[in-house]
Length: 406
Image 1 (cartoon, one colour):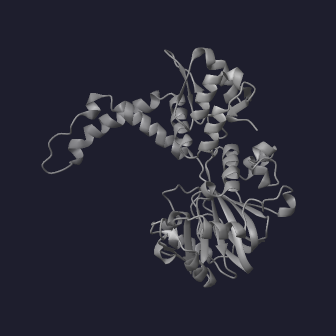
Image 2 (cartoon, one colour):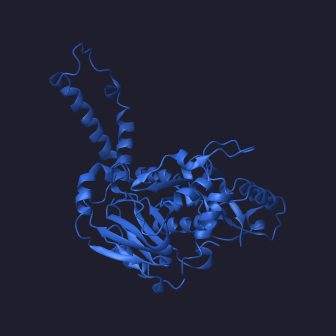
C-alpha cells in the first residue's frame, strides 16, 4: 500500500529531520546520515536479498534492467545474458547461471529501474517524487564481501542510499564541481576526482541495515562491502534546476523569434564560408530578436512548459486493465471513486469551449456543467458514482483517470 494511503510520509521514512528542516538545511547542500534506530517505520520491507533472487531468476529481466561491475569496470551485456529459450526467443535475457558465476567471483550486481519492476518500490518512489516535486528512480547494488563495486565518482542527481542487508563502509568527499548537470558526468573531471579520492575523506562511516544516507549531486563517494554480501538501494532524485527553466525560456523565445521573417531569411551567398565581418549584422539582428522575445515571455508559459516536461518523467500509479474494465462494468451509484494516484491532473480552462483535464494521460474534455465535479476530484475528493454521473464515471474509468476508492 502506498505510503500516503497509510498516512505516512515517504520522505520521513528516510530522514529523522522535520521535512522543512531537511529542505532548508540539507537539500542540495550537505550529506545526511540517518540511523535505523531513528526511523521507527523502518525500510526493510521495501526490498531484500530474496527480491534480488526473484528478479534475476524468475522475472525474465532484460539487459537494460541489470548491469554488472567488476574491478571498477562495467561488464558487457553478453557476459551476463543469453537467449530466453523456446517461446521466449529474446537474445538478451538475464542469465541466472552467468550471474552466479560472476557474483561468486566478486562482481557487483546492479538492478536498474526498480521503480518500474518491483511493486513496493513503485509505490514508494511515486510517493517520494510527489513529496519532493522531483522525479525519482530506484536501483539496487548487491556487492560481495570486501568488494568496491565502483571507484570514486560523483552522481549528477541527488541520492538516498538505503542499506538493506549487510554492511558497507562509505567514504565521502566534497564536490570538485558543484551542482553538476546531466551533461557534466564525473568522467569529464576524471583527474580531479581521482586526485580528490587520494585525500582523506570528509566523511567516513558504515551503513548497517535500515540506515539511510542522503547525498547531494556532485559529492564524491565510494563504498566497500564489509563482512558479507551487502545490498543497498539508491533512490536517484533527478532534480529540476534553473537550467531547465533556461531551456524552456530559450525554446519559447526561439519559437517566438522565428515568427519574424527577417530571422527566417536566408543568409547571403558565401563562397568562402562564414565571414566574421559579413555575418556580424545577422548575429546582431537575431540576438536582438531573441532578447526581445525573452523579455516578453509570460511566466505562465514557462510554468506550463515545465509542467508538460514533468508529466513525462513519471507514470501514474499502476492500473490493472482487466480489473479496471470489470470495475467499470460493475459500477453502482453508491460506488466511491477518486482520481488515479499520481496522475498529475490539472483542470485547464478554455475561453471558447469545454475545459480540459490535463494529466499524464490524454487530455479529457470537461463540459461546463461538470466543472464542479472535476474541481472536487482534482482537489483529492472521493465522490459517489451517482454524484459524478454513471456514464461520465465509466468513461473516466475506461480512460484510466478514475479508480474505485479504497
